[in-house]
Length: 330
Image (cartoon, rainbow, N blue to C red; front, side, top):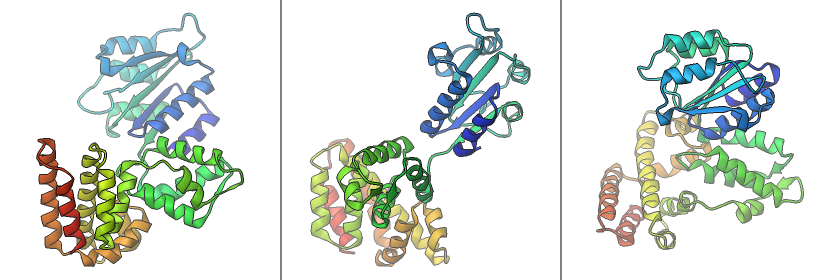
């Protein structure tokens, strides 16, 4: 169940067993907070067991199945539960979850969960399961609509495009980051409308987002701009790996785009194949033909070499400059 639907179920009825699975910790944290709120339980009253600390399974089961002593409810949080993936199996745990005491509640968190496992199916039957999947680039617009509605703000078209393009280039989109940035911007905007100027003034520049400008300059064959941006970013040596990562991803996506376009995969279909926001995929369709496949293959190898040489102290900004210039002169 996705986050939105999961949160609605908490307003209808509280179950005794919950599994919060997935990589998006923001959703997991929010779901856990609401469950405790509905149970009218403080965090200090919850028994927390972290499976990363190698707590024996019998101890976990015993804690879940124990009657409450000082509180009317026994609420147990089992973090990083390995029982929903891998080879772990426990009939006792299965029976415990199927026959929970009326006073007992358990919340499991896990990065991965196998839907084929019996334990997963039991939780799905007696409780609720949250699938906290990371936000995809093509889902940004929908997320933004819901977020703006919740804070009673609007965003101009040019501001939306700027936001979607900048965030859409990230390999991993942190909802926690997006929430914090939009909330911060909203606090600095007096009216209901968020403009492009508001975003440019308040949106935090991350290295990956700043490097987007290099990609833009390379696509436009603007050697001087690309090199200037590169040198600015390289004032911080920690950005070397970030830049290599972004450029490698860009080259890889160009190669994939060539393949997909050759097979007549375009528009939204291309965006999903490349895991891009549609705005960026649209730009790709225009610039892909300007890149020879042989050049991209050579650059991909050169970036791998640059990454290795940097780690052993044999590469610096000049190595990336040569690569950037080579891409611009294609």
